[in-house]
Image 1 (cartoon, rainbow, N blue to C red):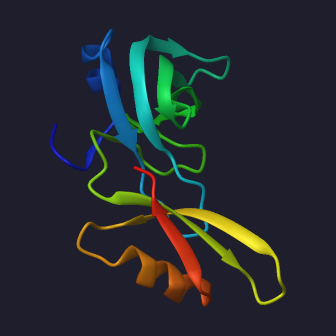
Image 2: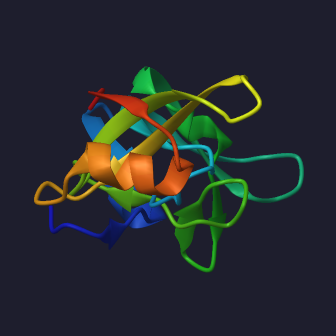
Length: 132
């Protein structure tokens, strides 16, 4: 599967019984959406939106996605892509200037320095761990 191919009903229909990977792109501070799921099928919900029926094996709940303009999107209309993410996923932990502990999941391209990126965005000393 080509990187950055949007998740469509045709693709889901062709993958019934198979395990797929999926992701969306998010900014630092937004909730991440990625994972693996075994596809069981498609069904309309009570509002007439096409939904994915699946068993989530890892990560975010793909059954929360719905079809919008021939592609599946996450709850805030971010498109969902099929395949392994073309980026790395990290967890950042830091303490704010007012002493509060914070944690955030973020993405970084393989050739970027994730720790430097997180430190720049948080303006703090940060502990970074790759999670996916």
